[in-house]
Length: 182
Image 1 (cartoon, helix red, strand yellow):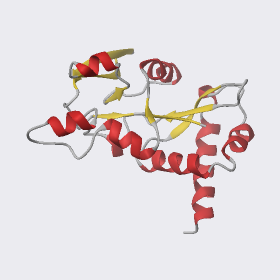
Image 2: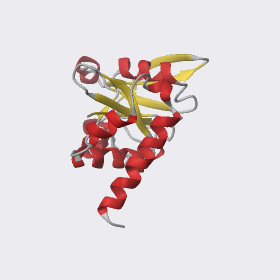
Image 3: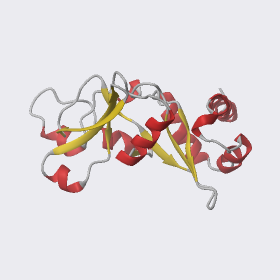
Image 4: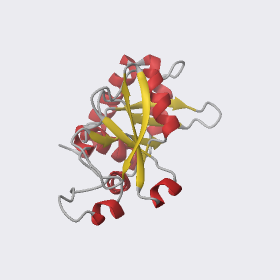
């Protein structure tokens, strides 16, 4: 498939998702998003990687003053292509046995995204219920990480919970949600 066809397919997918979920971005028009993406092949490549790993990216924030958009994974559960990961490289390499293939921070860097912050995760949860069966690593303060821990969130009992775990832990139902500023 030609590169331009792949870009058009991605833009159509993003537009369909955008138009089906107006509550995520009230007052924002697709033409504004498309204009912001035009001429940014690097950002489109990142959005493609988010899509390909199961993230279903959509616009969840818009700054009218700067025009900046925040795309985040809006799949119902933590993206399937980004699960069974410990928090970071140090934690992954520190495991003596059953070492996972990757870590959330390593994969995020490879994709060109960041993990959601706790505040971004909580905002996302105001838009729809996410992670009702899975959980997602979120950015962890350096002081917590220095002590060996890492943070993750999920939604249970109609409430968003923030938890801690050893950074080296990983579970089939825990991944990470990505954030991309455009």
